[in-house]
Amino acid sequence: MTRFLKVVFITMMLIGTGSSMGPSAISNFYKKNPFKGAFLTCSIKGCTADLVAQYIAASKANDQHDEHFKRQLDYDNALSRLNPLKKARGGDMHDTAIANKKKFKIDLRRSAMFLIYGGLYQGCANEFLYNSVLPRLGTGTDWRTVGKKVAADAFGIVPFLCIPMAYLVKGLLLGRSVRDSYSNYWSDVVNKGVLFKNWMIFIPVQCLTFSVIPEHFRVSFVACVSFFWMIILSCILSSS
Image (cartoon, rainbow, N blue to C red; front, top):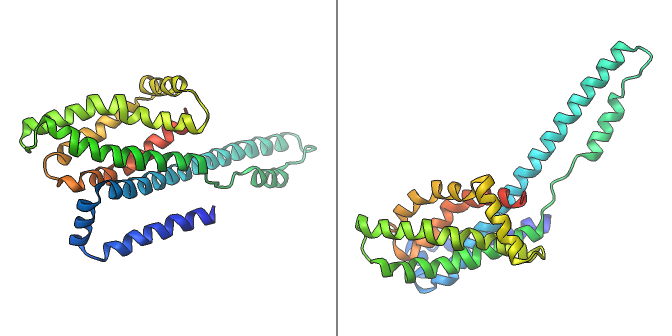
């Protein structure tokens, strides 16, 4: 765990060092290396968002464990008051609770899935879609052109490519069939509203993406915003 966090920290420091070159140097890098920049930004973002989601899930599990221990201890103390001959087990239970309390441990396979998904799809694939495919609907920033691009993304790319790809990558890493992966996706669409959660975040975001954000920064802009979406998606996927 410590070694893995060091790698993430060093990578982020390298990016921070690169940013000291100035805004113009960063802009030139993304213009000259669109796919490399997209992969670098989105893979680190995806992996980092998953680490946050894993930590949140572990903290929630420990909170539930503590609450269960507290209820059990209260129940045991109540019984001991009713029956003086019965000894309260507070000390033993406390030791058992500490022993059973889970330590935060990184799921490297899950993090690898989000690193791959972030870099290849949210990075490279979106670079191609945003700046090579969607411009066929128009190259202006008028409301009609922007509306067509947002609609194509929200109702075409997202439900049929973007989110299903995350389930497919997870399924491949876990040895599941393509059919099972898409079945899990459809189940989460129906029961957990994964698609509607995406639309609530990204329809407004994409209106900005295709209207005011320069082409070579569009993927990076979406990556920054989608950090929080990736945390939500990671939590949903972990329970699928």
